[in-house]
Image: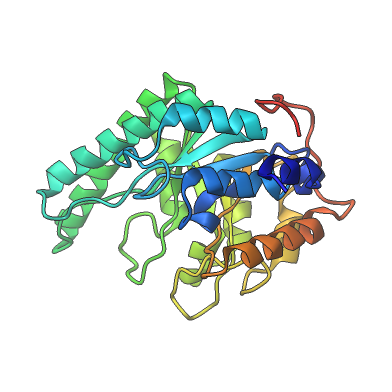
Length: 309
């Protein structure tokens, strides 16, 4: 069977949300070329995709990918690129100030990719650069990061792109971005409407937090949810299929009211060396989690780019 025939026969797993909020990340297929990852996601019944952009897939430094070929493939598959995860791995042999400049330049290049693909959102890690040797040094790193994020938000605003800052897993309480509340305070102070949060539920568990509480507290500035599971007390960034760890998904489901949350729901999962079976498990979770009649509905919005499957 040809890949196109498989795609045509696939049932739409994301119809429960009208195919608009629910997104699948290419991280599940990170060891495959991007084209293969996209074909598998479309063949599995998803129409929205977030493309990974750190070292693999759409990292601007990855010369193996042609953005226009990606654009054509997504149109053929009926995929809508909703978001891109910007790069964050940098050359640590460079001066801290140079590393920050490198990161900012990479994110700007990811913005250009987002424009080409019609993606309305860019997910960024709050990258810091320097040595945390004192309170003053730490605050200077934070200031430098926040200044950079404001500049990036202004650039993204001119392209009609949202910038979603992801909360970080960290053993150290001092790591900037560990606490979603810290990021929330910053985006509120920034005065930039296109600057918000990407709440990674597994990272919350890593830090012994409560994903439901974080959603309820900061929902007005959460642009995206990286939905994955993790296990309390392990302090490992596992990115498990939801339902495999410690998140209270029943309570999380109740908190996802259409009246309060209107952002993206992104399944960002680790393949754990078995990408096909993880993909299948994720499909089953989506069916169970979102098929309840009380689940949030989605009002008609922007039509999906490309030809519907």
